[in-house]
Length: 215
Image (cartoon, rainbow, N blue to C red; front, side, top):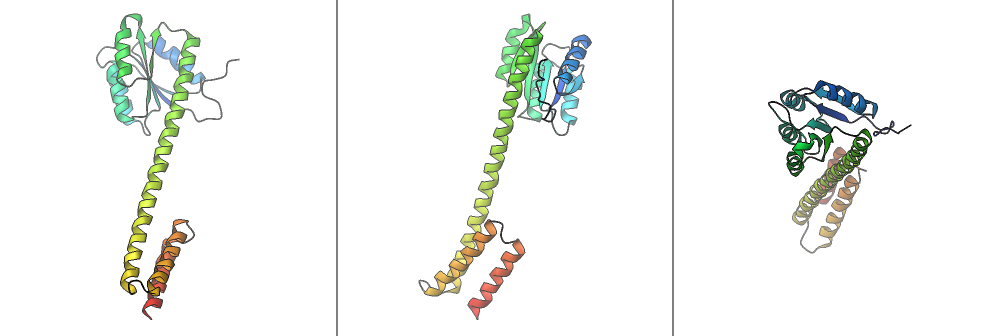
């Protein structure tokens, strides 16, 4: 038995399937659900755009027919990426629309599949799509962690700068009192930075040091 594209131990990615032809739409919806995706369907580009704007959180994946009356797959692609830049979009196209499918890839589509499609080839494309989604998710997580660490470092640097100014104001320049005061403040900041002191304990520690220096 072929293993599903989405492993059973992982959460089901949300997927919007867009096709104006009901037969392939229903067939693909059944196939994608069996492969572990949480599928929502749309029969027109207009309906797809409405669902893209309404979905919270945004869809992880979009599979859309390229040629449709009214709003086309190209419109759906643009709307999906505008709503969620990390969304992975796969376009479906007939043999006569390969040039348009290539243009869709230039606009940000992950890949295109020609119709009528071969199921095994389609599954392989889905597996590559999931690998890409995993890498994108890991990239976004790393960006968030780097941003959080940068903000934390900036806050700590600002705190240390204020402490140094306070120590300079409270002790004669170059005197032993200045170095002791700054060392105490830096130790407090280090403990707070490691999460060993709460904000309340940190502020109380500063007040105690201030009272001792002024005594």
